[in-house]
Image: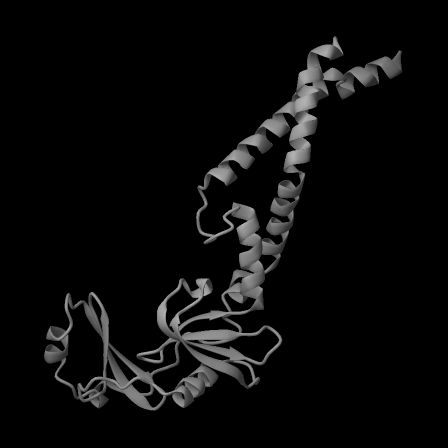
Length: 234
């Protein structure tokens, strides 16, 4: 077979390999890391509870529920909840409103209460390292406004994000989540918000990787293994 016919393919395969090497390595390494860390650990289920059992019964909520329902625009549901040792009623609609058991507006928690609630949800024994009231949360909590960021002094820097109006836990983040998120960024090649799985850069590199594999398969035809075995047999 005339090997000169394969020269352009060989050149393409070599140049494409140089361009793709780091990204293919990142895909493989990222796949290994993300498959090695269980998702429950990524989501921090072993670090903190998202919700605690409600110690109050329905009779403890004495508010006029119809009045509360009409006070929320686009009313949808009422939920009996609690914050520390206080019953709370959550009215959901176009926005959320929080009320005490008697129907009065629920007062925004203090920093001491936020720290105590975070500690109650935390499954470890480390103390709270810091608590900050943020006007806008970081990317790892989707830039949610008006939240508390409570970080514990443990080895994984466990961080609980709590709503500033109700003290309810929104989500849990840790070093494990941040490692997973970093490799997810490399995997989908979205280096900004890390949520666009259909970005042009990823599509381009994926298409080039397919072409790289196909060109390698074609190059095998230059000297296929079965032909080499036949020549050795002679």
